[in-house]
Image 1 (tube, rainbow, N blue to C red):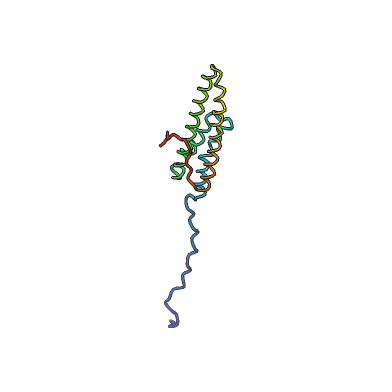
Image 2 (cartoon, rainbow, N blue to C red):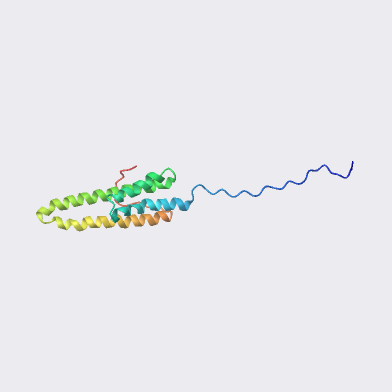
Length: 145
């Protein structure tokens, strides 16, 4: 037998480095869903009946458990769109009732201004949400807490 043989085992090759595990949800995904909470309200302006309420409601319900920030943005968008819809409905009813006295037509521009404000504020909120900022809608009743 040869005494020159060493009893050391052959060197073990290190395992290849593991691929980094991506985070389950990135910040950009959360920002995108936050933005969609607000901008989905624009569905009401393309002819979907009550789309301004249904859009934020659907996005909020689908993603609120997956992204905590979507819960906040979804509630804000939903509350604002419900407030806008109620204000437009009340304004329209009052305008029709006052039209019998020939002054109801003066309220129609107010109702249209409420609709335009709903559009503008939804776009502003969507941009702010995409930038990672919180946005507080003005004159909003908190229906959903």
